[in-house]
Image 1 (cartoon, one colour):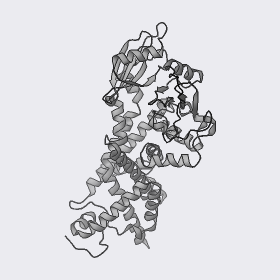
Image 2 (tube, rainbow, N blue to C red; image 1 turned 180 degrees about the vertical axis):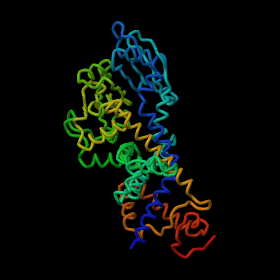
Image 3 (cartoon, rainbow, N blue to C red; image 1 turned 135 degrees about the horizontal axis):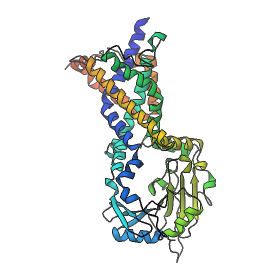
Image 4 (cartoon, rainbow, N blue to C red; image 1 turned 90 degrees about the horizontal axis):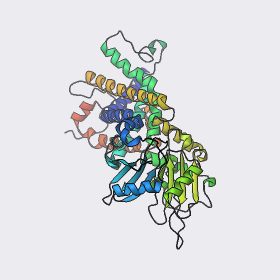
Length: 455
């Protein structure tokens, strides 16, 4: 009766081990960049202090004058305007040059001085964000990050299954590390104890991070919209627009608003667009959080879009304004979100270390450090134990022969489609490559599942 149970644990251990070995480098990158990104605004406050800080002296010049000054500094099309959220904060004007390069011009709103110009593609924290989100590799990198996050969730679940104590005497080394039993035991305990206590926080950060991914995250967004948990009729002035353009295509907006259909401006003969002065006055009148950006229309039918997703999810807002009449076409706030949208918005601001201030940042940092500890100790244990000519994984037969681990992986494959695709890839690799090679079977310590032509 004991042998099947032993084989079952061996099977789970194999998957836990192999997944850990493969994604270790990615997890170290994600953990480190995530820890840095938690302090994005603190770091930028230091890096760009001379660009951000102004002396509140006299009356501010108009937003339109500020934009004109920025255009004299950088030739191109204005795409964004951001007034300072407090009297001592500079204004920002986003300009896209003819060659497609995006710049931010920082303006002193009191005397109109240009404080500095940044190439948006070279901003330090934006680079950190791209590494964290897509490994600086575009769509392919996004899919790799998503797959690594999904398999990390599998490693946490299988790790808990493997390490969770079956008897009260086994809680030592699971709940607290054993500090006096040598280096080997200590490293093992640091891996297991960190995994036990950090598992909930890690899964939360992994799931909220997955919301940004192009495959699973987009799927969740589409399900949210199709389920009716999307946009209530009350946000529209008049009927909801029939538009194939999503708001994320015209402005940088909160997660809940990315699939919001973008309305169009009513263009009539003789009409000219309203000025940025009017849009800023409108934003103040409807009490949009002062950290908002104004995104300019990208066509003659486009709209001005006010967007803010500040520290607290409750202050998020996405507002579309007709560029000719200045009429508000849609006003989408946190209180309009469905229950799913509210949960996601709160999860994202917590993930970014914003919702609860420095306590949130500290919590996120501890989670990142815990993941780094688990990765390093797990890899160290593997290197220490593995034989010279083998991975050191326990002998095991086919996964399908063991119901519990098989069902765990199948459920997770349904929830995370990229996991399912990777399992198919592993199966084909085993069938077409591993099973045909005696050396690979020996190195991986797997049983021969069928007649093979040894090579």
